[in-house]
Structure formats: C-alpha cells, structure tokens
Length: 290
Ligand code: SF4
Image (cartoon, rainbow, N blue to C red; front, top):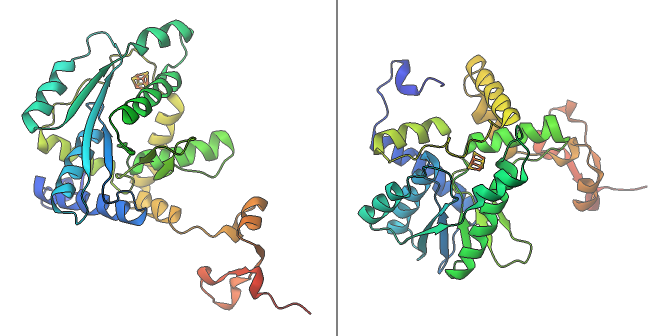
C-alpha cells in the first residue's frame, strides 16, 4: 500500500476533507463529460466494495445540492458465490434509506462450469454481471448506469492495453450501449484509489469480502498495478501526471492514420521554434498550398 499523505508528517485526512476532495473530483468528471442530466434515473451498481460504496455516498451528496434533479436506484447482483453475505448490504441500504434492489442470479455456477480449472473467471463473470445490470436498468426505468471505476482502474487499463493488446486506450468515462438505450458513466475516474480507501475506512462502510468467487488473481492487472505503484514511489505524483496526459492528447503525435483522417490532419508542425505543443496540430483547412 502506498503511503497516504497523512503518513508523511502532514495531518491525516479527515472524513470531511476526503469527502470534499473526492466530491470535487467526482463533480469535475461528471461535469467534464456531462454524465448526469436533469431527469436522469441512474442505476448505481454496488458490489459491496470500497469503490461503489464511496460512489454511492458521493452521488447522494451531489443529488442533495445539484441544480439538476436525478434519481438513484441502487442495485447489487448476488451472483451465488458460496457464503455471500447479502444481508450485510441489505441492512446497510435499509439503514441509509436507499432505494435498493438485490438481484439473485447464480452466475457462479455458469462460470465454474464453463471455465476450465486454473483459468480466471473474471472475464465471463463480469460480462454476465454487466448483462444483468443492463437488463435490470431497463426494468427499473433507468437511463444510465453508474460504475465505480477509479483513477487506478483507468491507468491500469491504459497500461494493459499498451503492453498486452497493442492499443492506446484507457477506459471511457461515459459510453453508450450498442442499442443506444443506456449510458454507462464512471464518476470516479479522477478519484485516487488511496483517497477512496482512506475514506471508506473512515466511513466504516461494511465492506463485503471479495475472495468468495475463488477466482485466481487477474495476474496481468495486478502486475500492472504493482508497476504503477513502483513508478509512483520512484516519482511521486506520476499517477496524477499520467491521468493528466490522458486529458491532453496530441493526435498528430500518434501514428494512427484513422485518427489523422477523422480529425482531417495533414501534417504536424515542428515545435523546435518554441511553439506550444497545443499549437502543433495544423488542421487541413489551415494549410496554405502552392
Ligand atoms: S473477482 Fe470474482 S466476482 Fe469479481 S469478476 Fe472476478 S470472478 Fe467475478
């Protein structure tokens, strides 16, 4: 675990300071990508982990003060993992007064039957869960689904795609389903995992164990996570910089012809003259020809 700012001599963060910090980051992401509109009904997918509890907390706080009106329908999928403590979530949601639905679908049996021993379950398991969430969202009249992926998920996906898939792609903050009927949003994409972890501890969310499925670790994702943590230890602030890079892309300095075509780029300018990188791209209409 990386040291939290509070461990470096500074005053440890409080519940309120983390709530403000995470709330600001989530609000910025929601605003940057127009994630929530007036009249939206969001299905908030909760797993019982720190990320989704935190997302739910922040969305509810935002709901109270936002100028737009939106509804939250909280949904958990009980996938039939042996020993799943469904009552913990039920009791929490009841205590907090959330509009909560628990869906019981035994995907665990399907996954363990279809995936050979020794292989990881996660790909099929999460695909089945996603399908259930899409179906339930439609049944509940929701037009959007909120997922709790955070900054580290975005960065790990970026490096997984880079190192193992030969793609320069992270995780979309907002995407639409194939049939156009649902929009998936990720309000926590700017939130640092260490802040979420510290906040979840201070909030004393009743975290559900995450090893009930018996799945092997996602080795590549874990390895990339460790690599990112090491980079952060060597150069503190690196994760922030990499996230900033994802918001500051220079298409002319990538080698994707489709991108050049889509943006109607014809040439990139040599920046040796001191021009800012942002000025380097010359849209075709600005090129003076002989
Ligand atoms: S960790 Fe377990 S519950 Fe989560 S996606 Fe993988 S198999 Fe499914």
